Length: 132
Image (cartoon, rainbow, N blue to C red; front, side):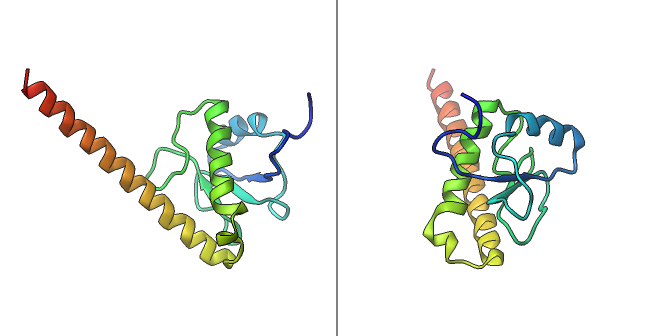
C-alpha cells in the first residue's frame, strides 16, 4: 500500500544542519514530509524553529531521538513526540513559544529520568556483583 500511512496524520518538516542526516531522514519520512508552513512539527539536529515544536535528533543533551536509530524506532519515537507535543489539548492551547518551552522542559525531564534510571541500574549491578 503506497501513500500516507494509515492513522497517522502527522506532517513533518525536516531541517538539519547535517546534510548527511537530512538526506538519511528524507527517504524514511517521505510519506510524512511537508513544508515548514504546513507541518505539525520540525525534525532537526538543532533548534530550527520558534514557531513550531521541534523534535531534536542527535547524541546531545535534550535530544528526543538518539542516534543511531532504525526506521522503525524513528517512526515510533516521532509518533510519541507527535502525540505528546502536537496532538494533545494541552499543547494546542499554548502559544507556539510556550509549546516550545514545554517541549524543552519535558525533554529535560525525560533525560533526567533516563540518567537516573541508568545510574540506578549501575548501582544495582555493582551491588549484585559485590555479593558474589
